[in-house]
Length: 530
Image (cartoon, rainbow, N blue to C red):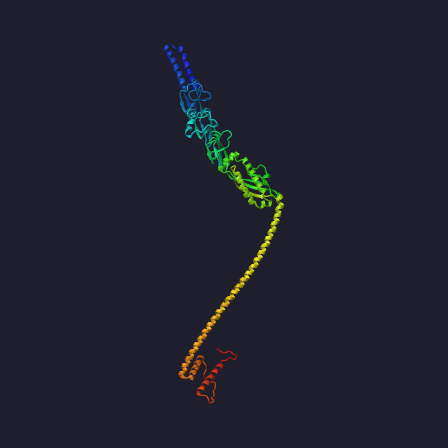
């Protein structure tokens, strides 16, 4: 565009100058010459204007009227010929005279979300000795370092070569002749995974030092603390990230795996074959569960580079060696019977061995031990022996049951006898108590009779003293007759021989009447009536 403006101005000026010889007067010729100069000057001035679009950056190149660049320099910071450090912002810019300056516009860099820009500087100070990446820019200086090439190449002390600093998502305006940007994916660490960082930023270890030494974050080498699940905007060249799974994993050592091909590495391996102390060789199906914890992830990377094939080979080697060594000290039958003991012993040894390289073994499980071909006869003998032992135990149990039944019968009989003995004792005690009661009652009755007889005797004596013995006896008889309802009508004739007194005759008659009454109450079957 500027060239066109200048060309048009030159053509117009030349055209004006071409008319000067044909002009009639000196004044008009002078005026035409001045007009030609003004047109040419205006064209030159207009051609010095440059426009930079809104999403562009203007790069100025000085082509004339300036000193040359110092050896090794690419970007001019003091008006030297070549690419100028300062860039042009969007808008119109004057003073970029044709032939002296040339301007190029390039689109600004836009980095989308999920990406990161890796920066390489084409000019600057040489990298410090032992460094392969320029030190990371301070956060407060980042904008000025990337946007002001003069500051980067001057007071900022920027280094030439790959930079540790990166461009995060967004729009960035910088001198594209100084900085080359490569857009790559950001580092995304998934769940159940950590990222172990190997840093190439900083002074590398001296020759002879371990290149994979575990260091603190910020130092060159393998960082001790891994990156947890998240998205990180980092220089994936300066900071190499190795993804390590922290999920629990299981390796199965089975006969089925030995017969298949194309199995995913680290999940199934061929079975383990062991030899016992009594010379039996047999396979053992084993399952080993392990994991890599975040704190041990850096150790795994230092030892194996990743959690892939090399780690699996180390684990397999340790598992097979430990199981074979354990089997050498026991007999085959004991090995079969002591499965849980073998599991615990193998687990303890594996935990100790694999912890040295950052692997945490969490469980060891033993499945099938041997098969029909290797331990069939031994297991059959053991089965027969177990059956015999079980039969012996059954017989012993039956004997114990019979003894217990016998003991139970004896105990029940003793209990019954004790019950009867207790009942007899109770009956004896009751009889003794009844006898004592009867004796006490009889004594009481005898005493009462004696008391009544004595009382009656005393009363009879007093009556007899008052009315005479015969009359007293008569009174007593009359009481008896009244109480017993005796018929006193004479049925008995009493004949006196004349020798008895009247009282005796009456008494005799009364007694006879009583006897007759008593006889009359005798029933024919010999029982008395009530």
